[in-house]
Length: 166
Image 1 (cartoon, rainbow, N blue to C red):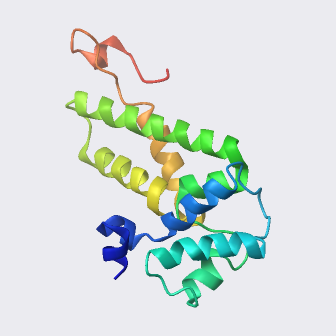
Image 2: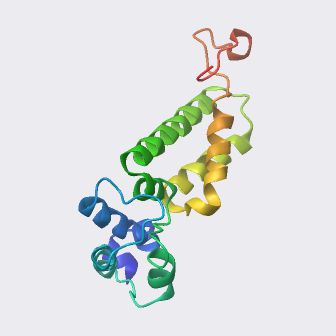
Image 3: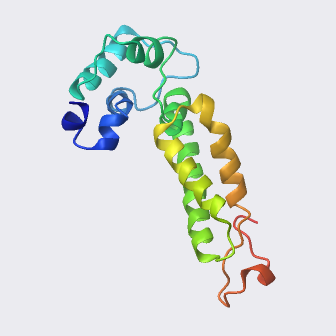
């Protein structure tokens, strides 16, 4: 039912995105770290979740999402809800670094396969994983990909000594 209401497997499987979007329209500046949601905030989130076919009386909604603060099950969304526009800007910078690193990794044929896996996992975490358990892997991956050799015009990236953000 959640997939049918959401329109896709990802949106139906990660229903927290409905609450994220609704809360963003309601409070575009975020809420601040440690701020407890008001009854109105919870109502906005629950209404959006009901649109995705979520049981709003379950533990996921009442204990995890809105129990002690707001947890939106996304590194980017949690950065925004806690730190407002600065958190959103940080999330966009991290996403830019990850995408730039992914492009550089595709260009450099010597990039190990695990780097691709780490970047794809970090991109997934930015969109669909809780900040508490996944931020460190996102930061590690972003730091790692800033040192992937960038391809020079001659195609000899290692001898050229050019690195992303170096």
